[in-house]
Image 1 (cartoon, rainbow, N blue to C red):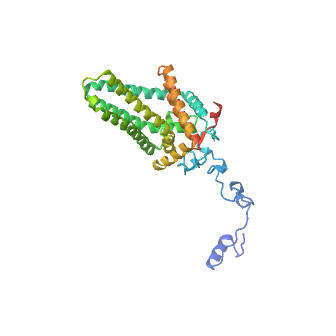
Image 2 (cartoon, rainbow, N blue to C red):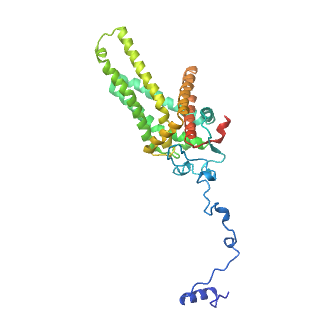
Image 3 (cartoon, rainbow, N blue to C red):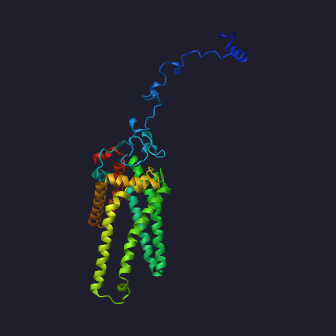
Amino acid sequence: MSTPYGGNDKQGSDESADRGEPWPPYEPTDHPEDRPGYGDGNRGAQGTPDTQYSGTQHGNPYREYNAGSELPSYGNAGGYGSGIDDFYPGDATRTAATPDIFESIRWGFAATFRNFSLWILGALAFFAVAALLGFGTGLVSTSGEGAELAVQVITAVISCLFMPVVYSLILHQLDHQDTGWGHIGKSLNYGPTLLIYVIMQLISMVAVAIPSVLIVLQNRELLSQQVVSDADLTSFFLTIFAVFAVVMVLALLVGPFFFSLIWLVADKRAGVGEAFKASFAIGRDNYLKLLGLSVLSSIIITAIAVVTLGLGLLVAAPAMQLAAGHFYRQVAGGQIPAESRRY
């Protein structure tokens, strides 16, 4: 083929380069990339590359929680839930227009029964381990208080190490219907979740320790006596009951501000420091609903435990934890299973 510089393509190109002349112009061909309009189907309305699933305007199931907090969108949460393709086929999700406590509770029980092998058998395994550790505590109690304390510390440590996995599985269940034992560790934000869980436990311990110390100091003379009258003993126990009743009420009232704390960290939406601010904002804007969830959860778990002599906790405990995760996603503007509205 001749070129404007004479000879074949290669010769013309080499010669033009030697003379310092420009390369010959690119001639159109019948290749797809040379056709008019090529690539328009992959460009957005403003002429920029299509960013489908990267923002709410393109249908991303996650949205920003903008009620006083600066949480990142779910689509940017470290790759977790960053688009529809991240979910298993058929795992339709949506965002809740208005947080619904009863929808969360219904979904929690439905998911527990539907995924029996994970949640009910998992609860059975958890309670079995707890019972064995309790039995071990009873055996070593005869060896002295030191051995009993050691077993209690080991039990607490095991619980702390295991809880981040539970939160991760609940969030995974919200995104994937077929969550199972094989998904333990998937999208696990272990270190930060463990840290925030330990912080929450320390706050709870301090909240209980302060009134306990005050009661002991107030009644140190009574406690030092060898013989205590019935009236003094009754007064002492009534004082304990009254003080801890106040502590429980206060914990219930401030609970909504801390409700989302560990969920935000486990869900990779906030760091440990940011989670406190974000959780407070969510609690402030959804206070009564979060308070209602806490009250209903306590009533449901207590009622089922009493009626079934404790056996119902194998269902109630995981179901209410799942409900809590579902409701967290609602109040934080996250995605929830689309089918949950049917239950």
